[in-house]
Image (cartoon, rainbow, N blue to C red):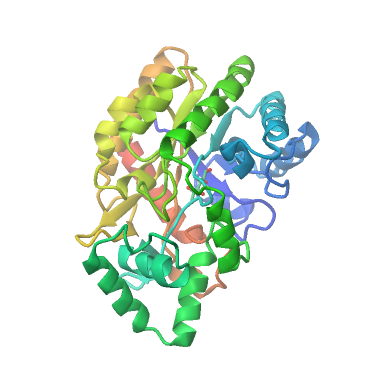
Amino acid sequence: MESLKEGFRWYGDNDPVSLEFIRQSGATSVYSSLHHIPYGELWTVEEIKKHQAKVAEYGLEWDVVESLPVTEDMKLRTGDYKRHFENYKESIRNLAKCGITKIIYNFMPVLDWIRTDLHFRLPDGSQCLRFDPVQFAAFDIFVLKREGASQERTPEQVAKAKEFFDSLDDAGKKAFERSIIDVFPGCKMGLEIEDVRKMLARYDGFTPQKLKDHLIEFLKEVTPVAEEVGAILAIHPDDPPFAVLGLPRIASRVEDFQEIFAECPSKANTICFCTGSLSAGLHNDISSMVDKLADRIYIAHLRSTQVDADGSFYEAGHLEGRVPMVEVVKKLMTLQDERLNNGGEKIVFRPDHGRDMADDLYKPPTANPGYSFIGRMKGLAEIRGVMKTLATL
Ligand code: DNO
């Protein structure tokens, strides 16, 4: 068996983790995006080539686009969405002209991922990201004051959330609010609570079915272009894979993906198999998901979570937690072997997130929680060890 292709995420020139470091991790491939281009605007060949050249300078390859963002207008089919669709299609063509054909996107309304603690301290002193449903309920009910937030929870959960919130003094409450909004929606945007309310309001009365319909319409529009130029689009699962803030979620369980693939059978319609996001839902059995979605997996994010009895989860070490990583890697390598035997391509993965550890703990916080260098490199090293072992058995 052959090892999977090893990737690493690079956030571009502003990423404190440089390409110089990434190259030392053992990765050969880079997951990156043109972060300076506003969502919905065109990625020109010139801009793509510039970025690609920076990556190539370090002997690395910009293999995967993470992400080509889908705008809120595109998800809602309002405002400027038609122009955004045209730009999206043209950006896919331009990427393919530069030889980049793997494109990740997500269709999560408003937010990308949610946690309540960005510095959860583990017994060994390293830190990771954590989600606590009680704290999140406190945010939803007492900070955001979202209508219906209490009714969606049991009286016991509401009482616990109140107890937590009341235990904070004013400064603590402010800090708590910031810690959640600062990663809303998935990156630091300097939002205020009123902005969050406005963003959520756009989805008032928007059902999961409607969002799914919009996703399928989006796919039916863009996959023919992707197919034409030999590209694939990979949907990123909901993180976490359950309902938050009353927003519709449609990429949380195996049935969701099966439906998405059945309704848009194009070969360009694939999943970014993110074991970390998926494993935060106890309903997801990661190993059997590889089997069920195998023919749609070309890109993977490998990481694990530990889900505790109270429904909270934290990002566990890459070989720990509830993802049977060795088994998953073995299945992916077997799948890849079959593909390679049939003239297909390698599956590319990256270690997703990592702990803040060693001297990364003492560096100023980065704009991208979960993306410090050493923890991710540890994850990559561990997975490389697994792959090498499996390859020589
Ligand atoms: C989080 C990432 C996501 C992912 C996007 C893809 O760390 O897994 O931000 O890049 O959801 O669109």
